[in-house]
Length: 295
Ligand code: PLP
Image (cartoon, rainbow, N blue to C red):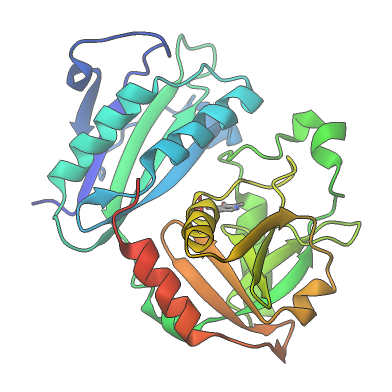
């Protein structure tokens, strides 16, 4: 069984009802060239993506990821994706990989080739890196200025904030800056003093028996992992809130995490060089839940 699978997809219109969805994608060799040089995803980062965790043969939270893909497409004025087609492609890829272990499944929808007739779409699934150190021992995090305020998304919609675009050069630069400062990850702060998100994750803080996350105001992504974990915590009787989180609350939190689809929950042990409380038991329980099959 291969441990990577790549599918090139002919994107169908959102309302198309193809009887044979499997004939709209084909498997290609990921080590061979597959994209054209005029491709706007590679030239300009003009496209959107999703990364879905696959655990023991189960793709996690497929619908929430596809809904977010649809929302990103709307923000970027890309054709609305056909979610049934993406579901079929995901199911096909997951059947082709080993049924045990953790994988990362990436979906990409780009504006296509310059002057070309249609968007380009593909899916690639490969084995996930071992995340046990971050999950079990936690991560050191630095805060970084994101350079705009909380209301930037409404004021300047062309910034495409809130869409998961392929333009992740800034997010990757933030991770390099974190590494330069001796940390593992970063939390972006708005210029008006609020906590936003990590470059590839959502922020969760605990105060007493309340869990808080920055409200997805349009300037940050709605994290599928955060939403899933909050639903689970609420079902267990915890109080969960999405609200503005001021910067100074980071220091007052009883515990803090970065959560995302593949690494799952990583407890924060150090913030800007200072130790903060790390709850190993809660983190273990979060990851036990997040590793179970979730739809
Ligand atoms: N925020 C940003 C900027 C991200 O890139 C990601 C995921 O990559 C997240 C939040 C977390 O989203 P999810 O939990 O759906 O992986």
